[in-house]
Length: 96
Image 1 (tube, rainbow, N blue to C red):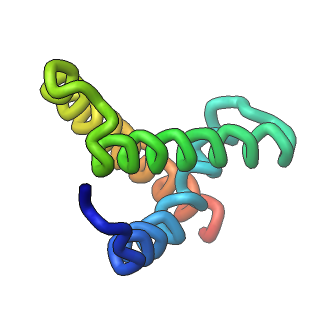
Image 2 (image 1 turned 180 degrees about the vertical axis):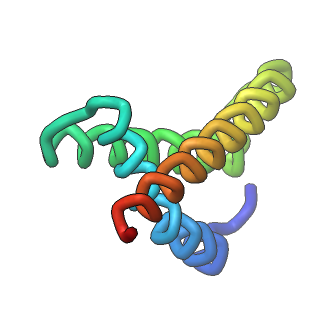
């Protein structure tokens, strides 16, 4: 079983610091209103992805499901990157 490495968590945390404002802005554009709702969606997204990553690292996921989970993670990563790009565009519009 792999050991917990704080370095990996810290690197991912730095990436999330850049990404989260863009995700929040995108959620606002899509009509999600209210600070509590936006915080809840952002928390669930981050927590869910971190939990799934931890389960994979601890080998809690059956080997037969791993290829599908990996494909799903690629899809989610691509979607999050796209949403981040939309949020960045919207943030730039606000700054003008």
